[in-house]
Length: 431
Image (cartoon, rainbow, N blue to C red; front, side):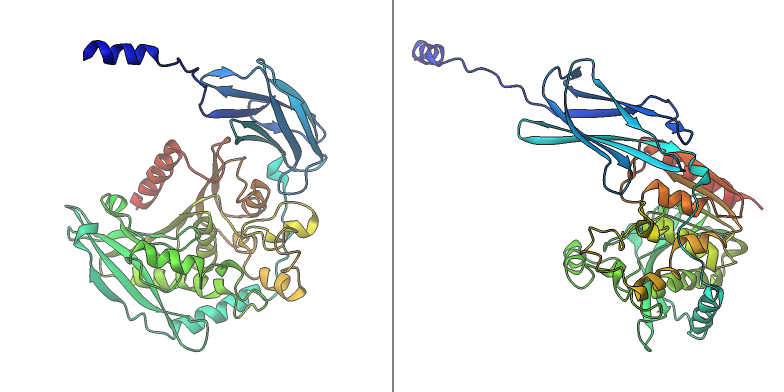
């Protein structure tokens, strides 16, 4: 029997082995620091790699132009084992010039990019500062102050650890109408008696549950991680998925035609309400309060620091909602890109919506941030373009430091997160 099986196997045809594997498209600038002076030419080097070796054949599509707008160069070139170098031109004004390269292989499309910076510290916002900006938000905070906090806590023993106790908390907040809404979050507190600093963690975009910051609380910090949608933050994933695809699908532009009905009015004031709660806790030390978040959370960190004088510091990753009017001036604007020409054929480019954006743009809160801040992003971010983020950063009057992970897009790397967390622990540990 064994001889029969062996004879059968030897009689099978030998099939050629196809080569499969991920292709990496690597794009680099000819300056190691990715920086150029206006008018200085940029050369981009492009190589496609598979299994550790450069592809010697095939085609690469190359698009080059200012980030976030139509490319000025769009061509197809031949790959070679040494890679190809493309003249990217230059920019005459401060901004970012981006090269996007795509390669098709085995029925899949692979993509890489690099973004050259032209004097980014000189970028200025396009967004206007309304003369009644401070009055508008002072009235909103006064309305909020009339509402009792009415905090209700539900213990979450599985969320904590040996030194930290966690609870879901919900409290009263401004509503979209005359009726108040609720604000939910995960509170993590050191179990040991004492007085502690507090950290508010504000969320990125989307609809999801939260687990809280128990690890950060282990450093002797009261933490509160909030959601923004007025719903509990401990439900099943299916509930959030349904809401995200349904009632909350377009929340970033909901009510944009009115500064009093825009979705983010309740959200921005909700961040102040979260601080009302934190500063009311008997174990808060009465002095140290910071805020942190990324993307939408980076925006909310700057907004909260600009609105609430109790905040003493912030750490913001790639802030969204920054200089959203950039697209009206033929340059990149911030997420959610409501004024980009691809968003529903200019559906949001109405005078009323543009006017509303002035009261919610992170740029105008950044002008009012006087406390110490750490900021972090990369040049390859396509969700929150660096042009928009520098527009906000450059007008911040308070002490500030920018930590760049140049090659990152809309993401963080472990070293970056470790550095920011260490900064927050050190900052909140000061007395």
